[in-house]
Amino acid sequence: MKNPLFLPVTPEETRQRGWDAVDVVLVTGDAYVDHPSFAMALVGRVLEAEGLRVAILAQPRWDDCADFRKFGRPRLFFGVSAGNMDSMINKYTHNRRVRSTDEFSPGGRPGLRPDRASIIYCQRAREAYPDAPIVLGGIEASMRRFAHYDYWSDKVRKSVLLDAKADLLVYGMGERAVREIAARLNTGEKIPALRDIRGTAYPLGARETAELSVPEALELPSAGEVAGDRVKFSAATRIMYEESNPYNARPLVQKSEGRAVVQNPPALPLTTEEMDAVYCLPFAKLAHPSYREPVPALEMIKDSIVIHRGCFGGCAFCSLTLHQGRFIQSRSAASVAGEAERLLAAPRHPGNISDLGAPSANMYAPAFTRSSART
View 1: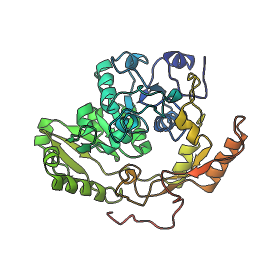
View 2 (view 1 turned 180 degrees about the horizontal axis):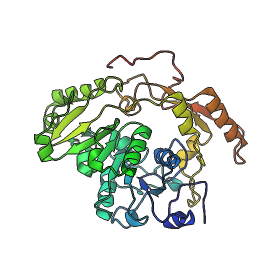
View 3 (view 1 turned 30 degrees about the vertical axis):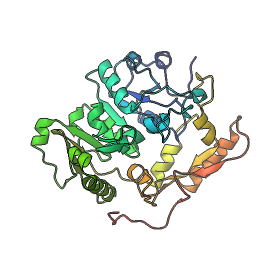
View 4 (view 1 turned 180 degrees about the vertical axis):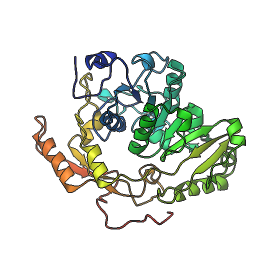
């Protein structure tokens, strides 16, 4: 059945659109919910607005690469994400017991994504099409882009970028980065040339690491050093936080077992006009109709409106500073009001809006900036 409100999720749906190939395949550990609170839906709509043919591969089987071949080789790249949550947090409780539900799956069913999904999905995509570029993103990749403490194995693991063997890692909110990646690949540039894009990190092989020269870069303690020394781990973490301001951050480098990860400075925040353009894209705000059971995570936010992103709090227990950044990016009042009118006019709508939301407390349109501060 043709579903014009949604990005295609099957080869049949791509053929119904008259496509002979797909430009980008977005792989996600979540069910496909076409709502801007679901990251792959947002990225998919952003790329669609650039005129690209985008398909969604939601919760694929990972025991072999068959699902990763069903759309054919993507002309530009695979975009891979574990989903809206770290896959380990999604599956396990704080005492390492398996959770009984997965709020991002139809019917809340658990077991529809692998542990460390970012790594497994990249491996299957590489197995399916060895020459296809792989761009890794999402909260799991963003928070594990350098050597990091992994609670589940109780050890420091190296960068997920090296384990996944992806070509690029997009960290933070990825609209600017994925647009540029797609545009430059579309003009014929090769993936090794895309090492100057803000909001991305890239791996270096042994020879390149030995000859490493990144102007103005700060070198973090190596993965081996932070794994064996808590003081050096803390020092590396502090540098990452200090270099999170997109207006003055420097490139960061971390060596790992003869290789290295290089992080470019963060992407610049979206302007109000750019925020309006993103959130006014034609989201269906529904789960794909192929699902016979509701997706619990959608039920929580289906009657809410996102009005800004980012958080200036910088709390030690929270990942927002390293993912969405400290700078508040707000939509215009007209954009929010327009979405409210469309939401209330939908036939299914109960007649009330549950909240005007954001990732943290209400920080809408603050009257101050900290563009000159390192913290």
